[in-house]
Image (cartoon, rainbow, N blue to C red; front, top):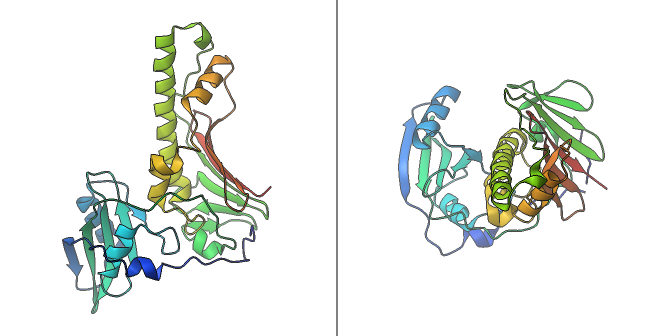
Amino acid sequence: MKLRLFPIVLLCLSAACLAAPAKSAPVYAKVSSPKAFSGDRLFFVLDSLGAGGNWMEWDANGVQDPAVANTLASVGGKPEMVWVVIERKKPLLAALVKQGAGESLLFYELSALDAKPVALKLNEVMDPEVVFRDYKQVSANEFVHRDQDNLRVMVSERRIRFAYVNPDKEPLKFDPDFSKKTIVEKHLLVREYMDFLKHEYSLMLRAFVQSTHGIFNWQPWHWYMPEWNSKSFISEKELEAILSSGVAPQFFVVFKTKTVGGEVVEFRANGNGFAELVISKL
């Protein structure tokens, strides 16, 4: 079964990037195991070195940050897995490599994640066994996450729709009298709503983008970076217009863009624990 939203395009790691003269990062830490890491041990080490941050899996076919490419070129051999965490002063990269009968986790502190922003693109043909390897298929067109059954994906030839349901104890309140408030009060409320939607967006990225593999050309961390997402993220002006209407919307469209291939990508949240990512081919 192939998800034919689009002939196949395989993006390759640029040889030019691998040969770039910039210095690779020195080894920050190394943790070895005489045999393959167990899942629990692997994530314990990652959490310990990453201080509980959000480790994001690197995509060899995605946009390449020169700092990452140069560092991986110095590892020697092809890593089994690579992750990056950004909730620290400098990004930290972890590479899992084979060493004899065992494995080692090599950690590198990067100066920056330095790829220049590019337009969002979808891979043209996606194999469900790769894209949804963390999901189980429950019907011809539906997948459910193996660890969270409230995270589901519906697939058709023209649309992929992710949905996550986790009702909040205190749903987002909508103030119907927003237009009557002072300029200062309006500004404060807009900032509160914006902070809430940024938080919802980060949760949607973890649920939708980081639970799948090889849908987009952006690396997971690019989605978090303002220089990449700001043109598509809901603006304070748009948010103020919604609040001024006095009528709560069915959804807040937190992020919306059109890809290079013309598909529309939307992240939406209702403010009460329901969120969805919809990828539509027009």
